Amino acid sequence: DQQVKQNSPSLSVQEGRISILNCDYTNSMFDYFLWYKKYPAEGPTFLISISSIKDKNEDGRFTVFLNKSAKHLSLHIVPSQPGDSAVYFCAASIAGGTSYGKLTFGQGTILTVHP
Amino acid sequence: GAVVSQHPSWVICKSGTSVKIECRSLDFQATTMFWYRQFPKQSLMLMATSNEGSKATYEQGVEKDKFLINHASLTLSTLTVTSAHPEDSSFYICSAIAGGNTDTQYFGPGTRLTVL
Image (cartoon, rainbow over all chains, first blue to last red; front, top):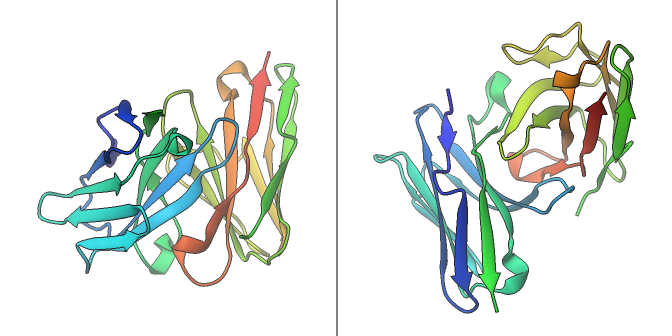
């Protein structure tokens, strides 16, 4: 079963506009969430994370929102730039214990930012 | 940031042969490394957790006798796909944690395995 889901396989956005990538999860034990960016034939690169004790975390153009009751998180990129074009993965983890560091990934969303 | 390398970046082998993939943390020591595999247009699936000096912990459904993991030093973990078959063809990615939190989990560039 897919515990982390990204239901939009692709998203196309105009340069300068906002990109919103969505992610849903089913496992209520997840308490730490991350977004990664990935180019073809490369490993994922960490973008931003959020702990379940927060509902928002911001880093420059990237903001992640967490809605625990809906088990939903989103990544906002504003303004979007052509260099942001990549595959974006949402990942979830359970902090601490034997699950430390283990990530459950969504299927990814291909973001294309048009000039 | 920290760098994780993988070797080889791609490999083609015949069915029935074994293939070894190396994962190295180049500028930090990693007591824990992870191995993932990714099928086309699908998510990265965690295969196993590799701890230096101890046996790897495999996720449910992953055959430990088929995917042998060795973490012989703080900078090197290896994944050996034994008696590879075409269904083992995939993109294998390793990651390593530097420091004390999940944000500092760095991923290698991946290895594309094709079994003929």
